[in-house]
Length: 137
Image (cartoon, rainbow, N blue to C red; front, side, top):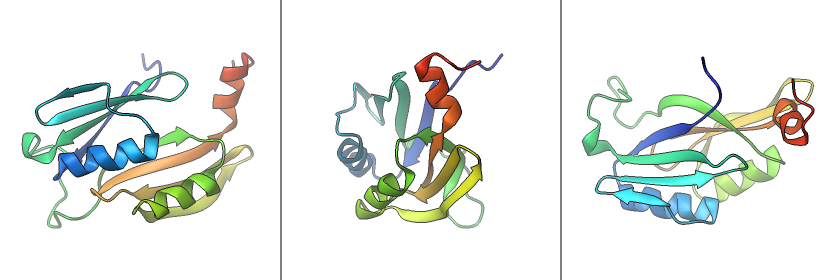
């Protein structure tokens, strides 16, 4: 049974630059590191965001004929303000993958491609807020 988001892993050809970029974005240092890997604990439920040196994952996140194309799943993270978050991501060097759009009442999302080729989704999600307030079902 799927019980919720636990870890998201992104690949980066320049792990040092990826760690620096995500440290700036998140405002925290990785809580766990080993050669070729760094992991952050973020958000209200301390979800894990792992960064793996691409050299350790040659067959993961295959990009077809274009090694510079974005790869991986789009994982949406709840944010309080999609537009402000998108602006910050773009300021930090991300590029728009999916512009801000409404998915339905209480759901607004967008996605970017980070400087390392990963797709990062952001969303205002009313269900997330309901769970936080104790009113989720």
